[in-house]
Image (cartoon, rainbow, N blue to C red):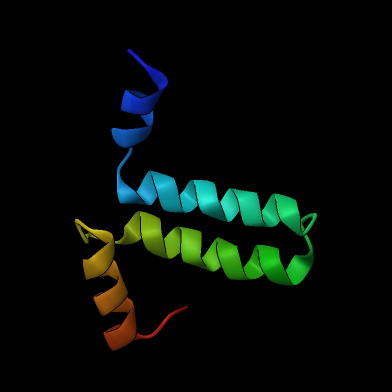
Length: 65
């Protein structure tokens, strides 16, 4: 399996969590960033949304954590 296929097979949750991890590494794990992204990580994991677009609409209606 090529590297492209493994990247494309990830769903939106895995890609978003990878982006969160990159942001935490970029800011050297400052407390404010960690707390904000920890809440978002939990919200993503508990979400029943099938796509990122559904997730964005859901967070606009229910408010971000």
